[in-house]
Length: 88
View 1 (spheres, rainbow, N blue to C red):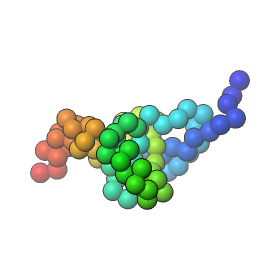
View 2: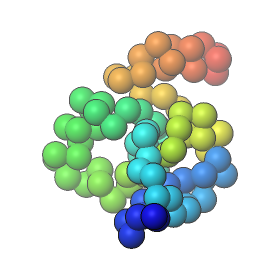
View 3: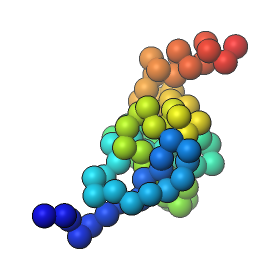
View 4: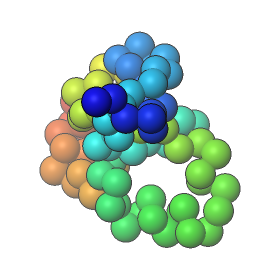
């Protein structure tokens, strides 16, 4: 039986779509950064306010990358270092 609740996620092109499954990764639309939902940096920013209106969600990490988001330096440190090396 389908759920009555849907979640707004971004697809690989950065377009929003509705999903019955919540996103597993979060992102910041303005900074184009993605990370884990339990990221300490994102949680601090969310608590401080302001961050929430730019928050987006992705079904998986591959989709976040395809949408042009980079890994968070805090919660995805190893991926961030790989990404950083790739842009130089």
